[in-house]
Length: 458
Image (cartoon, rainbow, N blue to C red; front, side, top):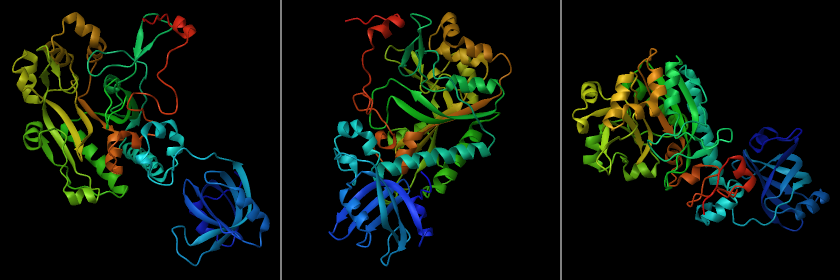
């Protein structure tokens, strides 16, 4: 829009004629004069129509809240103080760009009390509310600052595939049918785990991406089908190297955003001690005063058991099968001994009762990765089918490496002090797994099913 000025910049335009554009926030008709507040993405501004501009008064009497308008006017000083540099707009002309019907709920106040289905059906309106604007913009700021920090440390941003191979380990996959290969399916990534390790094989040394990950898990307050993670991997590192880097990331980013960290360096506690002291490996170390002041209490949890028993008595991994045991337990893993006592190089970052991130030093030798799968009861053929590509890659000179995934939503929940993931996501799922605004999941048309060679059973 030609010559448009953002509201935040109006204090520098006193005495000048300007054009602003945005939404009508509130309107107050006082007969001979009409006042209304306008807002754009940078703030709000009071606009006033004076008797000396009768045409502007007629225009102002027509407008309603949430109409999108363009206003031409003079920037004048105000005698009373406000948050916008003590200025207001003396309206000369109003152009209506788009009218709005009455909204289905009030967005001028906190919308968290509005029925969830209604909020998500009209999420684009919910996003106009002050709290949601703040949350989503803070999410953008967090990701931006993390990205800038990683670039300053020689990390390379690399995207990994969204269509990949289904693996039975871990959570349930979301699968995608292949039209070109009838009866075969891709899987959407639960994480870029194997690809980022292959990037270490490829000599990238320091990788990151703001990665989308999909898991078909039961939904809860802090977990959805989709999430975003700051995913990173580093070569030629040991546990303290990765943990110190992540600690520097979080400290630099959140303090630059105005937050206070309870304790630095972050306390480090073993899994065993965490379970004994807090009864969980995700805990909140804040006092009531800390909570009141939105202090961030970070801590590391280390020395996790590598394996745990399944319901049918077999061994499975606690975090992921690509981790390295702690050095003194490698021999146990290779011999398949003392399985219940093997500890892994896993490190979880917890904050204010949530898991903010998790990672490990990875197995970088084929025999170690193979031994892990043997402990879990896989045959030679099954191992080759599951991770043959990783074993093959590991034969060609792989540096020691490790990394972490930091959950964007979990970290934003801590920064915004929100209790639900949906409050820090633009278009979250409903509790029943339905998409916001759009109608999914829904049946495919018969033509699509035929193209994919799929038949739906009754």
